[in-house]
Image (cartoon, rainbow, N blue to C red; front, top):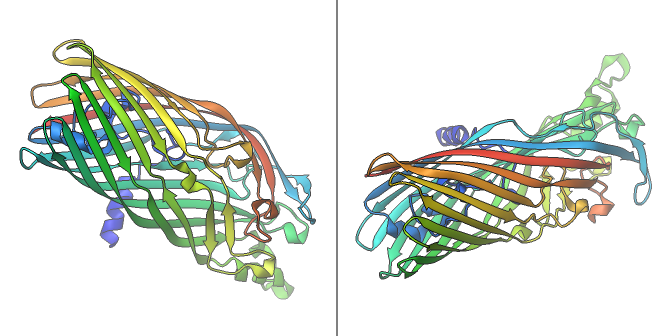
Length: 462
């Protein structure tokens, strides 16, 4: 078990980027598809078809390998941020301003994300394959003195899928596929706490919990591909939801540990806080990664020009609420054992259009554009640690055939993300709860975001 977790940790080391597609989707799982803004799901040109439409494996002869690497440069910056403590009352009125940083970048500068695919033709009608790829990834972190440090100061979700799949050629026109998905998910949260609130010293005795959890979840994928004629192909791809109960530990750092009583021994306040917020306690949060349904098409206009299109629906409403549960009751502090998140996300769609031009026998040029709708319903439900908004993809790239057995795909994408604003309200009553684990603060921030992706993929036919 330790070896397995070590291996997964190494594979997930690079998977820590701001989301590149709506919600917390990573955004692209192959470079050949990235070059068309993910419009080319019906193409089935290499082994990465396992993710986009696994029925396309029947179009591949022999044994095929594809290894992709995405270099991601995300940029999410916040500015004009405000934060306020609240005072006693129902609901708690807004009080003094929180001091600290009110702007900064909350994403890493550059991360690397790999994907691997392998297919093998078993018979004239049956093909087996395995995909190992990153479907969801998100990470943001504020400065520890940010005015938005309460209540969640950092969040990270990293996943990796192991997806064995079998495709069946029903006849010359129709193919179908069925796959199973084993998804490993790892999450990290940092929740800041205003321990000085009850002492009339807001911000003086701040502490925080680093919460880590992981889990395995299981799902499936289905696909169908139809060759309408020699130049037209239509496909459907479905990926199921996957449930996770991410369980682990919360490690508390308490600013009140400096409070001493008579004779230099820990004071009453220090001991009480330590009993409610121990050095380490169990914690868990349940999430469900969403199902998606994709309809896509490909049309060859002539031997040199091919057009692609894709429409994908995603049930992002699976993330309507979430509860971070601590094992230790905090009733003595007037709190429950739960932090509530209520993003109220909506289902979304993504529309992609792309094309390819066969410049020479060896070189194909590719491009695409996509509109990706955000699941965030309004500013009041935008999470400060996931400030998502509508986005537009512009991609271009190509494929170069090195020889009859191998080729290289390359792609560059720029993702325009609409400016956003978040109104953050950590008061329990506004979350529909009488008590919760929260510092009861409010805040606002404006966000300026974009991302760039550079990808390279090597394909080999055995």
